[in-house]
Length: 206
Picture 1 (cartoon, rainbow, N blue to C red):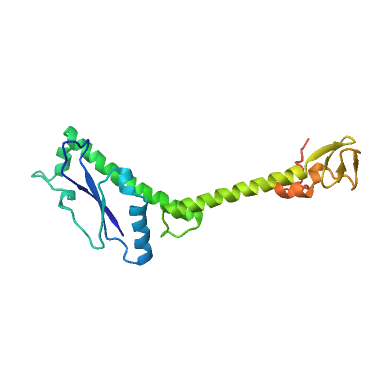
Picture 2 (cartoon, rainbow, N blue to C red):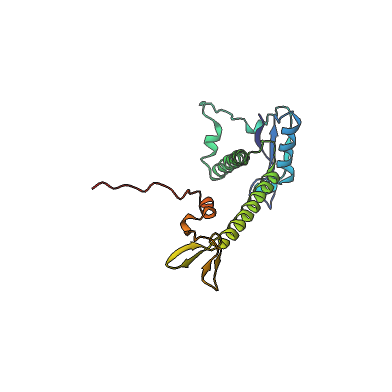
């Protein structure tokens, strides 16, 4: 499984915080998985979004000495002592935050792919295109349903609310060419609402 590490770089005079590189090692060796990882890191410019100087990707395991946890004479990790200082605490929080955000981003991506029924080798562009396609499909279906509703709209005829289309209502002559169909029994509207028009009524006990 790919592993994410942070490699801090020497801080320059104009840097507001220490610059760093993202190091990803043990990347998948199979072509589809590697391509998906490459697209996510390069095409979507993840490094720039989170403020990294760049991304290094390796197939082998790369151990960064700076990321090891050295122990002091008392047996406790030295970074706990460093964290007592304001700068050490800030750096510890930033490093933990970057790793946490990257893990959360990967989790969200996999959840989106699962929800869309797509395999996990797809990248963020595929997710965006799929979501746009679903939205266009939803809008088109909504517009079609609204046109049907306007065609099968209710109209009052002799004290009864009937379906304009099913009853072939003549607005000028106030007549119907077909037998009047009650609006709540219009088969088209019932199909749109998922109702049968024959649901049993709730019974009350006295």
